[in-house]
Image (tube, rainbow, N blue to C red; front, side, top):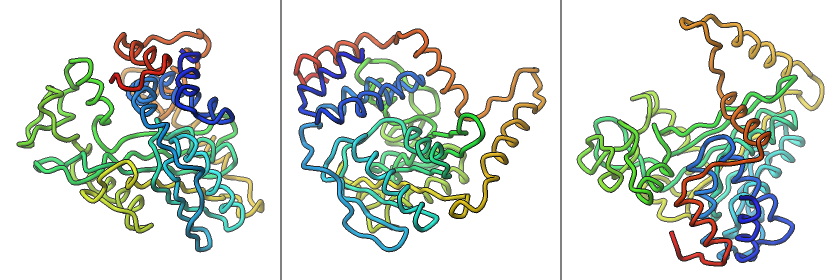
Length: 323
């Protein structure tokens, strides 16, 4: 699988020094079991790899704040630049808040928030999208899917959360349309605002959690949009007008304090001891994805849908037209 992805990058003229970064990023999503953001998304996004115009650059800054023009760079490469920019500002100012625009898309968000946590920071990563989602009772899509990930250091593995603010990510819809399979129930609505499992009838994704989920998605919309002067909602008309945000917070106050990882580790231990009705361990965010990845890496094998594998074979052969 990895060999085919590397071959695809070579045909797409991905810079040699960045091939491993790009391939490994999408394999994280696949090995975590988030298939809509793994190999399938790599196959889709690789169609646009050749559209990169150069390396990302910081075009505006004010103290801890910065804006990055990614210059249509490949998603994992531009995200790597932005997360390191947030990290460097946090080391200087105590916090780094970086907005990025004009980039290709990447897969799961967790590698970037986890990068910050492993460097000792509280890391938060989020992005918007075209207006592909709506809320209960509405028919018109008006919000981005607006995923968010955060990660905090502990004395062991970071505590990592990666989630969409919709009940199901849009990647599930795209793959269902390609494969001709049904959508999960009560995750997508048609043009009348009625739930549908037909991928060809679905018009928008449903924001989770009623009014509370609406409020969270709205906050992410603002923090990936107007905070940096980026478009929002219906004004996000393409990949290039989509906003991304990377936040790093230094809990050590410049190296003076050292209690943040210990406190988080204690919190995790307390959650592991929570009593449940069925007697099973409490499901702590991020643990299931980490265990899936650990199992996949140990086995050295992946299982993907036949249609996804055929698309990957085509990409590896230099065919970027089949989708």
